[in-house]
Length: 109
Image (cartoon, rainbow, N blue to C red; front, side):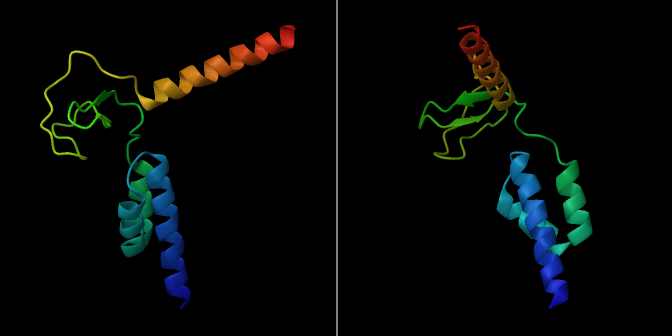
């Protein structure tokens, strides 16, 4: 019973780390649950997925990673685009910058 609780904790930790890094919670949960120490270490060492440029699928409008060749939602084959959408990290940084500017403007009043 204690071993099952330990496996569950490793699975949850791996799933949360994988989700924070932009991957699937369920996949990293399974990997970390089945191979506890190695799975969690792999989730921690896995690359961040939010620094990649994105693009919009012309078929369904879903925003996908720039390197995707096929839309994961509708199956449309995607050609390399002329323009790209900013990465999630760039969007987050721009929002933080606007919020800081708004706070500075409010403090000046």
